[in-house]
Amino acid sequence: MMSAFNQHLGVMKTALRRMFTSPLAGFLNILVIGIALSLPAGMYVLLQNTQNLVAQLSGSPQISLFLTMETTADDIAQLRNQLALHKGIHDIEFISRTAALEQLGKNSGLDDVIAGLEDNPLPDAYVVSPTATDAKSLEELRNELQQLPGVELAQLDSAWAYKLEALLEFARIAVLVLASLLSLGLIAITFNTIRLQILTQRDEIQIARLIGATDAFIRRPFMYFGALQGLFGGITAWLIIALSLQLLRLPMATLSQLYSSTFTLQALSLSDSLSLLLFSVYLGWLGAWLSVARHLSQIEPR
Amino acid sequence: MIAFNQVSKRYPGGYEALKHVSFELAKGEMAFLSGHSGAGKSTLLKLIAAIERPTSGSVLVNNQNVSVLKKGALPYLRRNLGLIFQDHKLLFDRTVFDNVLLPLQICGFDHRESGKRVRAALDKVGLLNREKSNPIALSGGEQQRLCIARAIVNRPSILLADEPTGNLDAEYAQEIMAIFNSFHQVGVTLLISTHDADMLRNSHVRVIALKHGEIQHPASHPEPVIPTGAGQT
Image (cartoon, rainbow over all chains, first blue to last red; front, side, top):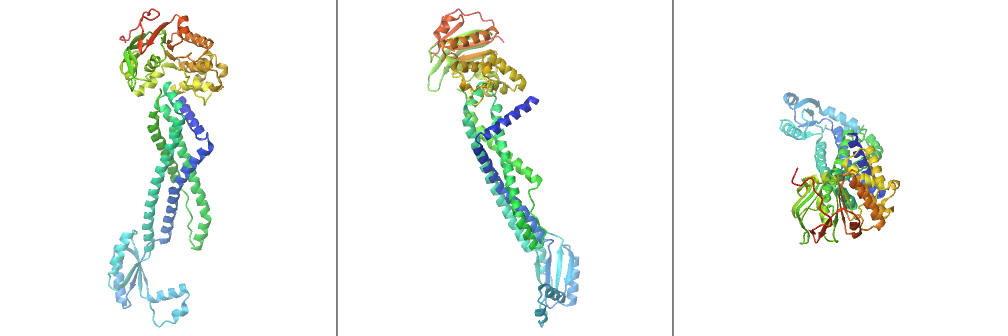
């Protein structure tokens, strides 16, 4: 048991030594892998952050019902009953036209202008909080409320947030495509590195075969090489992302302060970091495996 | 130990290296394989280690038909054979010690045990004081002895040597032969190919003579009685 462990440790050391026999080439390979991985992973982090931001800004969705100018107090009361009975609505707030005008005056500082108006141009309004939160049912609810008598216009307040979310879905797919393509590239890089190694170690492989090495024994250092190279590439990618986020943090803090928001950039979570490393190890291993399967059988002792 | 039964080997392209070769080598026996270059000596040795497969006939090693062995079983056959090559096939990216260590690493030997074995093997061929050198710094004779050390380090029961003295001075060749004799005395089965006429004349070892891929009869020495036949198990 101990002997098997030592053997694997020895193989790992051999793989490391081979990786850095020409240090520059070794580091460059790792850097290429790191950059290739950091692109999709970094975009994923930004997406995740944008999503948090959107969730924070949009808050709970509301629908504003602007009533027609001709509505009477009876109509308003009747509408209230109707809304209160609706299953899709959990809260209603009435904003009278006079209250709305006062509010407008206060918020905009246009008191003088408003005082000069002959009529109040604002309608009465209900602000409705729906129970549903997904874009589709909200839109359905809005359409339904639009049909109610006395309602001039039903407006979904956070419509922009839902549009943005749809856009983010699009971006998510783009990241996925990019990640798949770069993963293929990574496999190709490892495949080629291992191919070159196998070629330079042709003699050793032949001799090892002659003195009774199994395929597994010959394969092992190459597999370790691929997996280790993937691991170092993954660590590099992680560092690139962490560093970039650190650079973005300060301008982001200033920006969110300007919008009086408490938003902060989230770094890669522990589980995301582990997934990144495991995935890069796996890709390296896979590239090595493909290369070994393809090239090792061509080297037979003569 | 080793038995050839009507073995022929035709290489792609039609060249017939061996024609209906039959012989047996008993356990613990030592024999020379003689003949000019191109007579089929190397091919015959390669068939024993299953580096080549016969076109027809069967090659038995330890009563196992190696000509039909699966690829996955070859490593375990070869661990039981010590192979010595004319071109040594040493690795120049590591020390003398590590070259001899390789077969033990392949078999998964314990680290401390293998260190002892490597030194014992180097001692046997007189290279113990060179263990830290690179093989490139060794003379031809020393490289050949290193190759022998590597072949014997996991104590195989059969040693196959292809022209082990081919490129060496007579003096070095004597040394190598002395080493082989010492293995013979401890019961190792040896088959040594050579075209060195002096070596054949000066020893009293059985000679299997090949000419144009065929065994020449009568051999220069009477065939010894073979205790275990290939057919028996």
